[in-house]
Image (cartoon, rainbow, N blue to C red; front, top):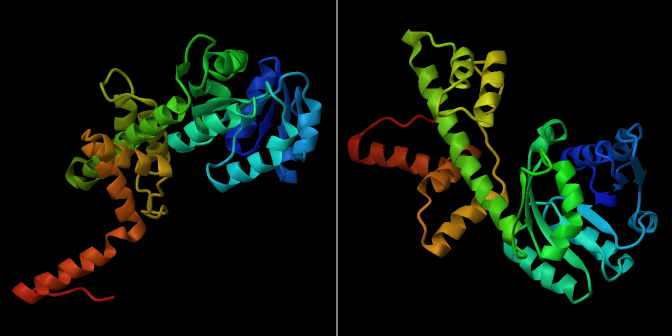
Length: 302
């Protein structure tokens, strides 16, 4: 019951703590001294700076969990880590990688005698207390090796984790999960915006959200978060109306096009995020100018 974790960000650090508190020995690796120091008081977690130290501290067939952003950070880590690994070791990628990249990586690593699991992870900063939802892709033997750790990380040993299928299935499931998340978040945000706009009813959005949390069909963890946010600041005037998007939402929309499966809610939620980032500004300026040209309507200038 020992494993290494590379990446002590919010998710990686929380997972290291949960695993250690569940009885595992964790060797945590991060180049950031501050991240290592934050875990110095956690019993069962030993922090190291480099990959050579990480590999040396683990015995037998090693299990190493990567909790790094997809793309260059993961690629750079693998480039340094792979020469230190041996046949029979298991790499688990918990970042939000594109599922096709994960399928290619699984094939490449299998040719080196290494096992690979693509792990979709959901739970965010609350995972330490409540557990992480894990969507695992890989061979049955690879997942069997990781199962003891999955049972600790999950909300309960028997629930909240799943061997979804072969390599790529875990990250594909997480991609779709995040697309659904986009749509749910957008629907809640639009609903509360409509409530806020009908001033004469003097809604207390925080209390209404709290009411919906109990017995209503829209109750969910996202609604729980809305209730907490709106209790503290119902006007949200200090928050800029800009919403970032991750690769997951874009990949989900592109997948719907490739498969010919309509996903209008997810796609429109993604478009709303693009709009908040200024992606609609040029089109809006042109619309305003067209109205002025054909109807003489005034154009607001900066």
